[in-house]
Length: 463
Image 1 (tube, rainbow, N blue to C red):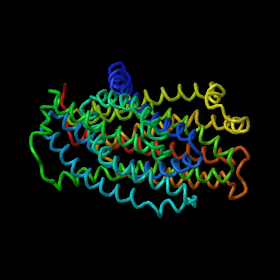
Image 2 (image 1 turned 60 degrees about the vertical axis):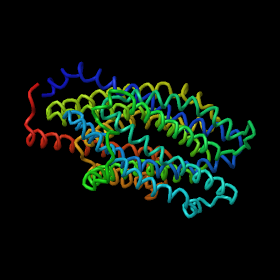
Image 3 (image 1 turned 135 degrees about the vertical axis):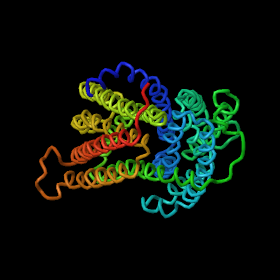
């Protein structure tokens, strides 16, 4: 069986790359939004940067949780696309719209009443006010963000991610001048500082939604899906199906985000140098992570389409091909990062103390990528099979239990027997790497069991 799977790499890898390449470009464009906001606000004032950092952390936690629920549309629509049940895709999109409305109301309620969350940080009244203003502004863009997430899930499901990527790149081109206008002021508009980033963001979000909706409405490719053919009242069975799959996905995203957030908070206790070094490595890891993430989304699309076409063996083959290729690619990336560590650090141009602190952490990021590639690929394959609850439990136990708790015990030498090289930030990165390795092992085992069950209960179609 392994030989047969390896023989399919020549077919599977180009199919994955065809879908993953535009996804990667789009993901990097979205990351560039955060880079622009941080760099441009830092030039305005330190207080505005502090407010941006706190407000962004709160917003991202809310955003990934809510949009994670909506992302359940992708594997469901992908299976329908593979089964050629095109008209049902339109109904799923409409029901996802109703779900998005409910989730948007919840998100806006939190964003506009974030005082208690902000007080945890013990910021000054001025910074807290700027952060609150930032979140209030973003609430106006949340409906567009949720609507866009539905359209992204649709395009991923039907193998058309390039459409979203083009729109994202156009939005990135708009973001820079809008940031300049609203952060620093001009043309009669007063300078807003950090909150100006939020104004620029919501304008781009609504632009994305309007352009993409117009494209879906006018392009003939989408006509078989009958998305706008009629109005649908809420179908609680379909909405419950989306919630049943999407809620664990949303919590899984939240677990990943909070595990890194708390990791940063703990490392902050080690001092400014440690936190700065950790942030450089974490930022580098985030950029690299876009590679396996994009391949994983592409894998989910192809696997879900094969499941919908009742080609269960083919679905498993694509899954294992993706695991093999993504892991090999990330091994190469990890080695490249290790051997290029000094050149990469020079791009950030940190102080000498921060640079010296960061160098040992490259050892962890080099093999961390391999475990990350394994776990994210397995997780997205399982979502194609509509399996999300057990992966959520695995993430909670590994990332929170082993990663955070283990990192705390190692990093702060709680029991007094931690080796010197695993104390401090290195201990947190080591524990996080081990937690990802554990998650990858369990998720791959779950994929194997799930694929075997599907093949036994759904006789494959010979093609």
